[in-house]
Amino acid sequence: MREGLARIEVQGASDLRLASDRLVAALLQFREVAVLAADHPDVVALAQSFAQEGRAGGAWRDEAVSLTLQRLADHAGARDIWLIAPDGAVLAGPPDAPAHVDISRALTRAVQGATGSDHFVDPATGQRLFTFAAPVFAPEGGVIAIVRLRLRAGDVEAEGRGNPVPVWFTDRDGVSFLTNRTDLVLTSERATHPDPQSYPAGAIAPRAPWVTRQLAGRLVISGHGSLIGPGLEVTRALPVIDMTGHALALADPVLRSARLAALSTAAGILALGAVLLALWERRRALALANAALEMRVAARTAELSAANEELRRTQAELVQAGKLSALGQMSAGISHELNQPLMAISSYAENAELLLERGRTQEAGETLGRIAAMAHRMGRIIRNLRAFARQESEPARRVGLAAVVESALEMLDARIKQGEVSVQWQRPDFPAIVMGGEVRLSQVVLNLISNALDAMEGAPLRRLSIAISRAEDRIRLTVADTGPGIADPTRIFDPFYSTKEVGSAEGLGLGLSISYGLVQGFGGSLRGENAATGGAVFSVDLREAPQREGSL
Image (cartoon, rainbow, N blue to C red; front, side, top):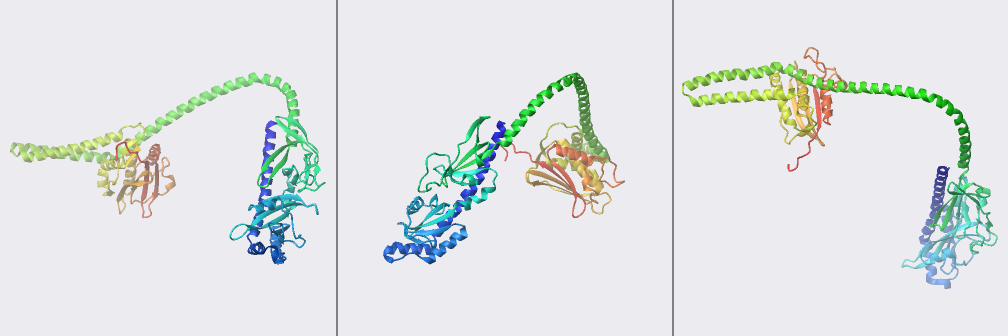
């Protein structure tokens, strides 16, 4: 119930805030009309003439200005607008306006140069009226007249009469001057009579006091008529119009729900006693069933863990198998790359022996230098193969992407020459250092270049283009070929889907799928598409490695 009353109070405060904002906005619009009327050229001219000539000028009632002010009042929805001299002389106004009026509180504020407001009950008609007064200033300064706008209270409270929540606004005398309930109009809880200047005798009706009671820590009230309740009173100060807003948030739904809840609780307690016995009998059966279920869950969890571990091992073996498959495809070329230097070394060694026997030591030294260069070349090829073949499980670290590309080109040099492929590659003019694994990244690059070479077999134009560039905070490697392109770009990374033409090369269609997983493991991305000029283009985006401390 406490939460329900809190929600009712919050909803009542929200309804009061909406009604208050609507009322204040409407009244301020009328105040702005009074201010605009005070700046009207005809109004200022008439007030200035009166200020300069005074009463010696004769009758100052100006019908043209009166008509202008009445048109403004009709357009704004006000009752009437008056132009009054600081001493109370009426310079313009409705036809039945007297020649002189008493300076009220609102007019006194305007004489002092501020905008004033007041409300009262017209003793002649019994109507509730609001008054706004705005000063008319002379061009050189100083108040020379007052514009008074009057409007009926019913005109600004009419919009809220459909609100189901009773809302009323009281002045400093405690009188309910504005409300959305007719039985609350001009009622007051106070025993003392309000200001007689605002309310004539007999205009205010007493309101019966409320009956209050404490409920869930809140004061719930009940009254009569529109305030019969029970409900929670919420208030809000409105200093702009010098009033206080009130609303009665009806608590009937919460109280009914509380009564129903109490009855339901009693019925539930009775039913609970009957159910407990049956539940007690089922408890042992459920305990046994839960134990059996937990055993099955534990067994299934162990099976899933074993399956996941087997899947990780299979994936690692698949990656290694991909590398060994690539090495197998390159074996013929690698044999040629190693056999050629060996034959050259044998020939150079025989020549060096003959040159030494003949005493031509300088030429023999040059021949031995060629033998050393050949040995270095063989060592570099073997070192690249050993690095590529080993397994790597270390986390991502700093890797030079250009060095990885050149290592792959060196391992595939025999295939490139055999296929008469022209290579367009130039080291980038910036240090392309990325985050990755050197061996795994070499496998990705080698796979992309091998696929490009396979795709260009038999093509009239065989050109391999490799480039490294920046793409925002990433380093991008692009491998493009002049082959037939990709038949279905949406499936190229599916396992066992091959992009190679039938008969051109043997493979399981796992290279691109493995490469895709490796690149994602580095936090990068791999995508493939057909180039507009023909052929396929593969792009690898990798995270750029952060600069080390002390580096430029």
